[in-house]
Each structure stands twice: as structure tokens, then as C-alpha cells.
Image (cartoon, rainbow, N blue to C red; front, side, top):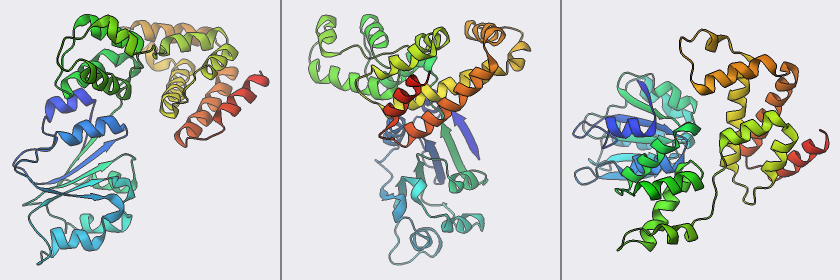
Length: 312
């Protein structure tokens, strides 16, 4: 059955990713490659030997050999599969018919996209399925603590404050920072002034961008074009956030029923009373199209934003 966790909660509940000494079928949908790397490296390999396959190598014949019709060619090694989204759906009936039984060894599959195979398998009682959700943009401090714990390091309050103030709040930035610190300060304490020279300011505050949009959408999009490195995943996250945010502004009914509102909730209610709904629906469609193009790493997305500015 399917369980959903934020990264730090999952590692807290499942420090070894799979349940030790309990063979089984384990599925993981993890969109973020850095989270997937951390979760994957926590699997104990001292007492369990894994044969590793890519999804396009997993066929009915392979699964039948390893889990159904044990033969001379099969062994006691467990199977770990990356890029599970590439597995053909024609293997699904093997699971639905109950032919795949992991009583003595484990089958561990990592998905970076939610496919029909993942959705259907996650409904089965003999399958442990997990969806590791992305950290929300306001959970940067928790994500930074998670990154430190994952790499078995602990930095001072001053270093952490500098990292959080100057880097994008995502695992890619945090893992890069940890690797950089370990490279330059492996045998001595971190010197903050030296670290400041090694790291350039990268963090763009999502709330600041949101406020900028309501002040002047044209300035918002012009500001996006100033970014020198075109990080498609970063832009995808911004466009995705803006869609979710606008949907809340346009449909504040659920918030109005809450007994206690946080600062962000109150801001949404205030905006819902003063924005032009027709105009916000137009931008909702714009952000949806830009998110799709960011996911596809569309080479002309910058030109699309320039054209959008010209038409404002």
C-alpha cells in the first residue's frame, strides 16, 4: 500500500530504506534525483547482495526467472531497479496474478515519474510503496538539516545561516555546498570568510518573487530573465508554486473555514479580495504552459517569456 512522506520523515521512519531482515517488494516514487540518491544509499548492502538493473532491462522473462520459475540461472541476490518508469506495463499482470512473491529476496524499484505501473502496484497488499514528496519552499531549514544528517556533518549556526541566506533552498544547492565545504575544510574548521568567497549568492526568495508579481507582473517576468544560469528545475518549481498559489487566491473558501490562519493564509485571503480574477486566470494558464515547457527543458522558453513581456 502507498505511504507518503517528506524526506526527513521518511528517513526517520525508515533509516535503512527497506525493512531489514524482511524480504519484500518495495516501490519508491521520488522525483528529486538527490533525494533518490540519499534514500538509495541507505539500503543496507552488507548482508544483502543486490543485482542492479535499469528499468528498460526488466522484462517478464527476468522477473519470471528470479521470482516465479526459479532455475539454474536464478540466485538468491535481491534486485534493485532504477528508472522504474521505463519498465514495460506488460509485466503488470505478473504482479496482479500474485505470481511475483518476494519471500526470500527483495525487489526494490525506484521511479522518478509516477506511471500506471507504479499506481497499480502500490495498491497491492503485498507491496510496500512510498511517495517521497518535495520539500515546500518554506521548509528550507528542515531540508538543510536533512542534507547535513544525510551526509553525517553538522555545521555551526553561523555557517548554516549563511547557507540558508545565500543558496537556493533545494537539495542540489545544499549537497553542492556540503561537498564544497568537505573539499576545502576536510581537516580544519570552516572559516566563514573563506566560505563566503567560495560561494556566490544564489538564493532567490520565493516570497519576494510572489510579492513582485502582484506589484507588477511585467517586472516579475523581467526579473526572471536576469538569471544567468537557466536552471529548468528551478523555473519549473517557481511556475508550479505560482499555479498553486493563484488557485488558492482564486478559491479562498477552504481557508475561510480554518479556525486559525498563519501569515501566508492571511495574505492569500487579503489578495483574494483585491485581485482581478479574470487577469489571474490568464496568468494561471501562462504559468501552466511555462511549467510544461520547463519540464521538457524547452530551448526557447526564454524567448517565450520575452514575447510575453512584449505583449504586456
